[in-house]
Amino acid sequence: MKGDIIKLAQRAVLEGTQPARDVARAIGKPYSTLLRELNPFDGQAKLGAETLLEIMRVTRDFSPLQAMAEALGFELVGICAPRGAARPHALRASGRREGASAS
Image (cartoon, rainbow, N blue to C red):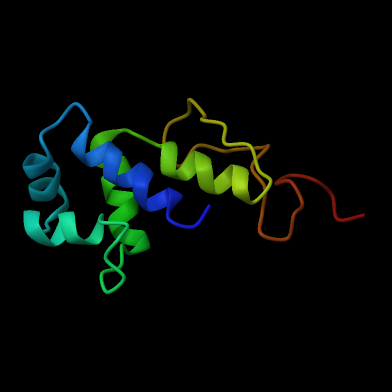
């Protein structure tokens, strides 16, 4: 598992539908910095959560998120609702479903 998330993010950037330089530009990182952060063998460089989120947003490749969900025992399910719409089945941090009574 260690390094798998970085490798998936690296693949999304380097093997995705957009050139890696365009991805770097879209997320506001210098190309060389992004490649270094995506290098699973560079122990000194780290890929931040915010950068990973931006990579997934720009590339539309959610495989890193899918892997994280699976590693934590969750199933990643997309929803087709406008941002801010009520999500009656979304889990809260407490583990209760929204709209469920606190009995």
